[in-house]
View 1 (cartoon, rainbow, N blue to C red):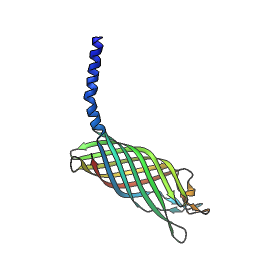
View 2: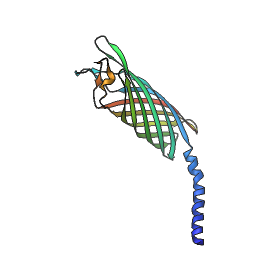
View 3: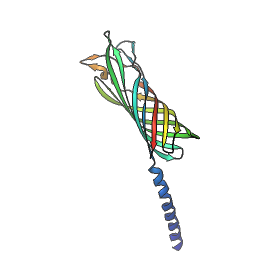
View 4: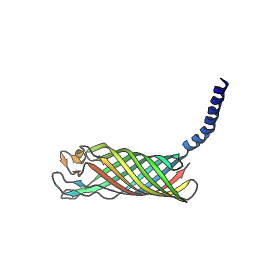
Length: 201
């Protein structure tokens, strides 16, 4: 019995010593606002092979991360962009708004003040146009760099790609039974080049 009590007391002492460390890691968060340029897949004219190009849109994003290990983070990342496109003989302009939300895992490779990051994640994309909106499953991957300017602040750059599985959402581009465009492929690709400022607390 005394031996069991001794083992239990050692386990309790180990947990008591470990909990403050785990708590400090769990409460180390990081917030990163992003801005950048996002390019996208083309649309097509209905019942035609003619492509409709979307413009390179300014995108805005914010990431909230937490340190899972000395070289890895978990992150929730939200990005928004509004792509304009022209259609019809009169060159009418419309827009396709895209909102991405992903849960990412980030691997960090340190070289002094520089850190190279590799990220992959799963989530969803919300596409909105004149005909309504739809939500599609989405995958994202990125490579980036971080330059630490202090113990809590970093400048972040990132090249990120998104791949979203499109559903039967051509009605997004229709009004009053007149459709201006449709998806060119079953997978929608967006690519972004971003810069951000990261603050850890």
